[in-house]
Image 1 (cartoon, protein in one colour):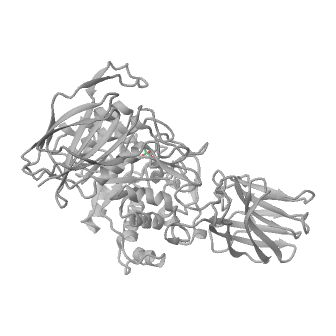
Image 2 (cartoon, protein in one colour):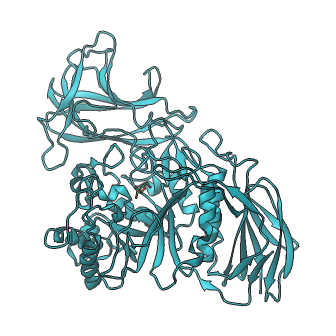
Image 3 (cartoon, protein in one colour):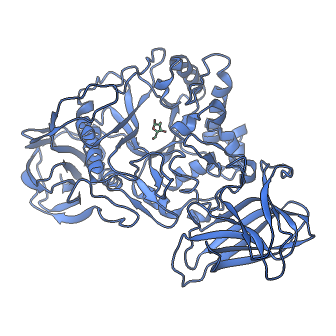
Length: 640
Ligand code: AHR
């Protein structure tokens, strides 16, 4: 029996409850959300060779290509060019360079691509160049355009390439710049964009933006994660180097074993959040880098505090401020919404235990200038996630806790906050995931996630915000650095994991207040916790097989009851709506279910597990419902 007290107004749910967490991991931006199709466009990905570029030579057309650092483009960050010696080119015998993109160039029918590149003819006079999108073997040209003559001065050239309407989509393609006239050419910042959301020139993939918008996120925690911190202080997310035209952005080595182009810079992050109806939860670098470098509180830390203050000014400052004016110059005069700043990321790993001082210095400086902003600590001293440091000098507005667990541990964690000390700061669960399945999670992951979310909603007085991580994965071989991701894609298509759909359901039917709920007589299931390195094996434990939350949308007069059945048998539940006067007998339900916990979605079978919406009946102040095996259900009940 589940008893829901509908007589009370309930606990208000934070208007920022569900959000997204993002960073450059699993080719989330380059090779993902950021629509650029050319990989290694500025030739900085590898110091020794032009990786992802190859020579195109018609038989008999001798040629070489190499990196060139002797011809930086003045006034830009473009220091390394690709030199093509095409002395063997001749009419009918082309020579060129080809880029293989992020696991191929995705070619779609009837599509216009924008190609651009810097070029300079070092020898051979004005050299004509052809830009083309073609099959990987060069046998089929899908689209091409000519540039009459590359001059002796660095110049930016732009062309449009339109594919025919009748071709079959493919990623087995490459982008080629070639010539039939002998000469020596330098290329830099070679770029190819497909159509982007809102037609932005440096824009984002529309399909992924839609998938995120469909989740109705209220915030995006950015730019990391580890990616914020960098392996070293120098490779942190240096936001000032991510602004302005892309030729001004040098890019940097990320924390997930590949270099970032920084085409996805701070302004792109901010417009992204705005485009999906969310706001940024801005994490600022706080003096601790992943490989252990720390900058202790005091004068040495001050430049980083100033960097954070400047960053906040860029986001919300008026156009009469230095960084607000820069934002206007970059194309967005209006300030963005901003309510939350996180100071660092997972600073509990700082072995030198300097967070208390660092947090204090950031806290005092930010609160002095922006008292309205809520400041988030990444440690709390009491977290169960291993060794955490104590934070004693200031009381944060929120504490960020991170959880990565297996399916049953996710279910057990549904009751974690029931006994939380209510006198302590409120919680952002800034990273969490039930790590079942790869690259994206399976139905067991969705069940663990849904169970955990019922716990978040029941404890909405203490949980203010939550964001799953990681959000994205490029499913091509080598694309994943971290398994159990929410949304998978290749160059052409994308799909949501069962967890994606569970989260979408929870977010869509969040409501405005959480109602008190008690469950009695719930059948238990036995679970043996996974063995952990350096820890004694744990004995099996009994955990519930069903999980519940109840929320109300006061404006709509609707009650949402979420039920997660985590086992192989259907389960009947009696639901008592205490205090309910008028219950409409008919309503609706949304069910996400699978035949087995390891069933999943994939690029080949993207809609294997999706929510099914249907009318429902039999609702009353006291009623029974049967919940399918391995299912997540939302009951929608009209209540007065
Ligand atoms: O989400 C993957 C990583 O997990 C994040 O970068 C980091 O914050 C956490 O350790």
